[in-house]
Length: 214
Image (cartoon, rainbow, N blue to C red; front, side, top):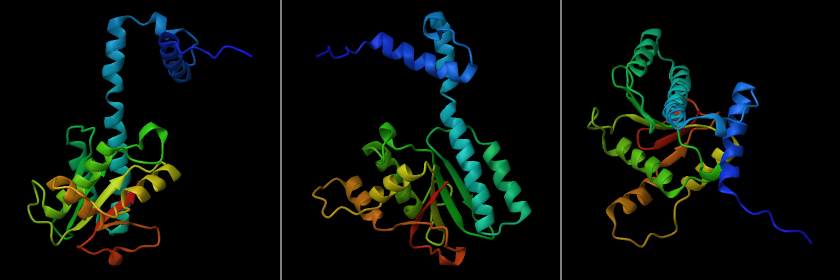
């Protein structure tokens, strides 16, 4: 019989930080012990931009798919890219609106299923569904989206994302609540459809909110 290993917060954090920075730098220094408080604060501030980088990359990847899927012109592609690059970073997502030749409105969400799992947490699920509601009812720039193709782009992490989306779009059998937001989220789930690889642009209609994995 042996003693169960006792959790040690200091050793856990030391291991996590050192493993990450060792992989990044190739240097086996104990960064946990070497970094000063000021350096840790600077590191935290730098790492806060990682979400912005992920959102930007996801947005650019979505734009490539969007341009190819809808056969956008070179001028339309350039306009979208220029608009993305002049917009301040946002960790929550990014809006794409095309309302000239084509009526398309999209929201990009860089949301990762919680705890390395296969489902979106309550706050994540609500954020996605609230965006779907806004795509349906209108946004700040586009007040009336009735005639627009509506798309939510979600970062694709493979099987985990597939499982998370499957649970997201599965309607609840019954919702017993008088909360207006919860009722709206329950209703919008019925209008969500995943864009499959076999689908063409003519398969998309304005009365659905589509999810595209990126």
